[in-house]
Amino acid sequence: MQSITPFALKTAIDNQEAITLIDVREFEEHQQFHIGGQLIPLNTIFENVDVFKNAGQVVVYCEKGIRSQIAIQRLEMKFGLTHLINLKGGMSAWKKQYPL
Image 1 (cartoon, helix red, strand yellow):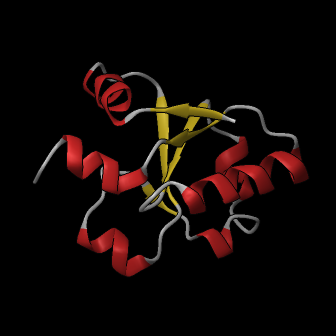
Image 2 (cartoon, rainbow, N blue to C red; image 1 turned 90 degrees about the vertical axis):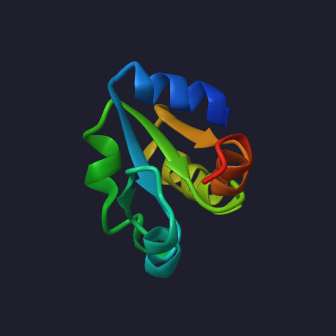
């Protein structure tokens, strides 16, 4: 599974690279803090598979990086997607690197 560090992702965002951000947390978590990603909770990823399929590079994130790993594994196994990238450590690592 591909992964990206918060630093590398921030650099990509700042450089306006063509990446899609997908947040697989729950609505309440997303409302509290996010980095601009589209909210697609883990339990709805199959209903929203076209979002994942129709994007170039997709960085998937959650709070700690576990749900995003699960989402990526499920999408890779079921649909053979190969362009999904997990944010290492999720939003917890992001906030540690870039405090509010």
